[in-house]
Amino acid sequence: MICNSRAPFAPLAPLLGAALLATCGLATASSHREAPFITTVPKVDATDFYLFRSYEGGRSDYITVVANYVPLQDAYGGPNYFAMDPNALYEIHLDNNGDAVEDISFQFRFQNKLAGGSGVTLPIGGKNVAIPLVQAGAVTGPSSPSLNLAETFTLDIKRGDRRKGSTAAVTNASGGSTSFPKPVDNIGVKTIPDYAGYAAQHIYTVNIPGCAMPAKVFVGQRQDPFAVNLGTIFDLVNAPVEVITNPALINAVPNTIADKNVTTLALEVHSSCLVKDDPVVGGWTSASLRQARLLDGSPMAGHQTAEKVGGAWTQVSRLGMPLVNEVVIGLKDKDKFNASKPHGDGQFIDYVTNPTLPALLEIALGLPGIAPTNFPRNDLVTTFLTGIAGVNQPRNVVASEMLRLNTTIPAVPFAQQNRLGIVGNILAGGNDNAGFPNGRRPKDDVVDIALVAVMGGLCVANGTTNALGFGTACNPSAVPLGATAFSLHDAVDQAVVPLLPAFPYLNTPLPGSR
Image (cartoon, rainbow, N blue to C red):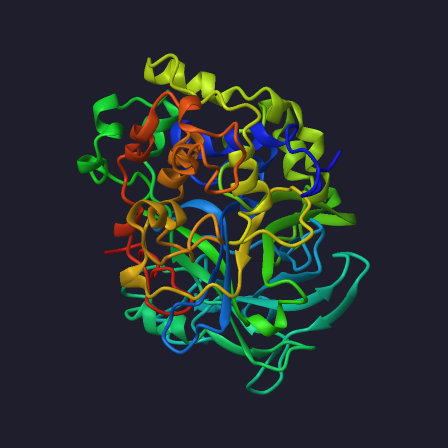
């Protein structure tokens, strides 16, 4: 069952509550290794998804969409590093009419080939022998002759159903090619002395069929932009309560994954190419594999020849809002959620109506009775499953899990962004409605925002006058923590993560050698 915006939200309400609680309390990491099957295929594991109006100067009419994959990359992960899977389909989906079904999908496919077909060789004792590394010397630009492995990708736009809709190739505005070289990972400073400059050569201006304005695309390794105290949080929030309730200690804990990289699929598209009749656009990312895999015990020479794949594309990864599958969905249904689509989110109703995470948080913190009692949690449904009325709720919304962005709300320059997004805007009485849960920017501290929301902070702000439209059941009397909910945080500060001021916004990846 799927709820329409005009129907009761009771069945779906706790899904959000649990999701947010998870986000902040029990699993302050984004979607890293969140389901049993996805741990076996990390190349198709989505880690974070972002959707925001570009805040680079002169680009505010553009929408930036970022999907990160392949979690927890150690920069020294040679000799093969983290090439994307050529047997996978990576997609970014956009819903521009609120019905929880994709209207536009950007589809990425990868091709990884040895240089010259058989790779770089060296003359050894009168014989030409293939080298064991992905590079034979310094790498200076796309298609460098020193690269033993040439990574490229294609990008298609699909309008309508992701499998049955119309398909057209996105082309390089310079020359019209449909194949784009991908930068090799940041092997180290001797191989690539200026990785920032090298990566910048792989930001392409592209033409999207049906779009009058040129767009940008970048695919490559970046420093993981998410901040979290990963091990401590999963160890039943193994941190003193005094730390996570004292606003002065927001940066008291180190970011566990500050030394990790990810692989980024980034697009910057003019809003006129994405918006239809409603200014609100929803988005999520997914990855699919072929149904069948045949392993060859005697693979041929080449690159990744040990498997043959066939059959229909089968979705194995899905990510919109951060952390939903990681800490909301029960362990037995995590793979099912990764295979699901937003319009079918009603099948997870039990995790909505009977959420386990509020009880787990009380146990972990040793603080019984702190969970809000305003059931059904329509405040969270409105904020996270349908969008907030007057902010980012589509006119004819179907409640479902995805990011939603109002493309008419102005972008806010990085320095003026409130790391708490709309929650911070409420607290400060400012003018920053351009952040999570209205889309998601890299600076938005989704962990802290979600913690405030799930523990009832927005109900406190809503008050008995129903100022935010969350319903009369959402009021301060249903929130045991009261205004204290606004002080909750995970002790890791998302706002201090290094980022770039322009597309693709995520920081240069850490090198394998320092």
